[in-house]
Image 1 (cartoon, rainbow, N blue to C red):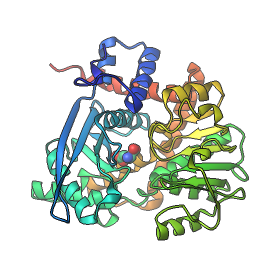
Image 2: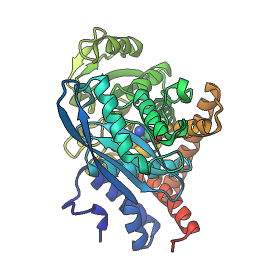
Image 3: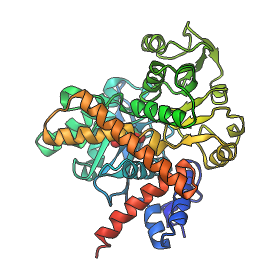
Image 4: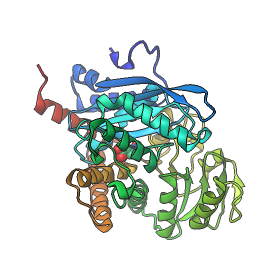
Length: 424
Ligand code: GLU
């Protein structure tokens, strides 16, 4: 039945398997027709491109690039662009599907998309990354645009990448089109508050989840996996709220301090040294051990598939706040539910980024900049509303927060689909 596994893909595994399993649970809960399930299981549009790069040394290398538009019933598609050697078509599909649910859950008028290039950005110079980004952009140019599909930063990309995409797209169109990407530099029409938005949202839901469990922020403990666009700000905001952040990791290692890590000092160390390793204010820790520390809140804010059947039984946190997309596998999710761990799902926890991306797109299209306070207030409003929707629905239907969030999102997408009708 699952034509959705995609052209010739033999078996589902990894994040695409997790995403499909979550969708299946939601459509079963909603009792929706098999044809509609099939439609949601299959991305609406996929593009795979070869991205040749002329390297600084004169040789040529070729990278695989992807853009997957999962669903556009609710509006243009939206989602990040990832540069990582782990990128493949099924990963991009999963991330695109999760974007559809995320946008629907927090009620921004978008469908979901994701892009990726299978490249390790740390192995390349700025010049090489610029050429890869521009060539990838020109390859996918026919399917992106401010009214069709709007990329944003994700793992391995940043505001500079967005500036190159915007410029390449604008040159092709013959005029400047700021609304084609979000997460741009402020001076090119980026939104105040966008850079911190995902972290702000993560911290906001973490504090709401703690309050719901009767845990006071002051004196509570947290461990944060990842010190990039999401984890770094989340660690800082949690510690500003009084939470003791006792462990933090990045791709190179992890650090631990029982009294709490000085996140600002760690940030300065990382800016200087490029990694959390060697930070003097803490002892070093096995990065895997971070996930099973005895803390109130665990924030996996790196990559998908880190909480698995192998370690979920050892998780001691009361609350898991998914800063990353898809950090918990289906098997791990079942174990955590069984063990009464409160999991705040990715499509809710990390939605702050796309919420402020939406605000940025509105500002770009209207050529008018909002004040940062206004951006942050509206972000908190949307996060709080989505949190309440999920908590209420989960309570009313006896679902986990992930099941409730996915079901609510799928229902909204189906509602839009049904109102529009099927053409022809
Ligand atoms: N890459 C981010 C995410 O996974 C942001 C996407 C966006 O702003 O479009 O949610």
